[in-house]
Image (cartoon, rainbow, N blue to C red):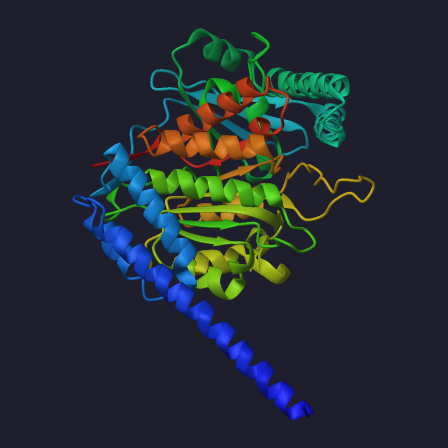
Length: 464
């Protein structure tokens, strides 16, 4: 038999294999259509229509399977698709702390504003030495977090020892920020009014680099402000994000992007896990979700999607932040392509903008001295750079100053969405997520400590 005949037979065989695979996919689509038709979908008509529109594409079989699974779960739970979604601000935050940089380094002007009381601006002269000490304390906390992550699972004693060191470092840092920055009358007012639920921190742009959420009032072991209050930040030059009461359409829409570098250098399996769990939580709540996870999270696919009217954007992966040029901060997509903040926000022009973005993004890079390539935690003091690009467009931003991808960060995201989609304000939802993770891991995982909300913490969704 000559070579030409062999090659011809091989081509015939390959074509038959391709044809067989295609026929199997067509058969699977018919099975899915039959499965969809067999369901009692009264009250879910718009969702069924959306699924049926995808039944012509064999490449969308996994997506269709997931959507049918989510639909069946909601039918079983008796949860029809939301007819309309309204976002509103309940009230302005009742209490606000303003912190403004003075003319000299380490000097701040601070005051507390309440409905019945507004303190005069008081000067807090921290001094350069104490400021250096605060920065060194942040480094110590970060190093303690990495010591915990560097311990192997079986070395429980070391885990406990390093975890306690991390917590003590956080408390020490929090107490210094609280007592040295806040004037005594502000501390007195906060201590006196135990009914405070919501706190807005209005800070100078250059002060965004400090972890205000871990300020600790020294009242008890768990006296971190981020655990006590629904806390939101605003940057003074941009102001508090104002979200008018707004009907967003017949259904909430979310775009979830996760682990774009899957299978490549820099891949983050826990980021993929987080994204998949967020997708499930959103779909179970009746949210229409577009997923771009792993290989599908390319620049040509992600960029157009951003302009298609999503209410929520969730990203789990790598990023690089630029405090000096915030609009040049970027998310890292497939093939290490850069999606800059300025390109993201341009996609929103003339379109319905997202209400908020939840960006769990750690800096690229891993330490080479560990057998298991565990990503390092780095203190992201330049996160405000990426956040400000969203804030300029009136979009709330959730991120972390100690970003990491692990079970605890996924737990925090799931708890957040669970509460927010149930009508709890965005600030209170984030506070509950922190408390949930803090309690579950006895405070000894980093995920709860770094979460930050830029925006008005009273933002709430009304569904019905």
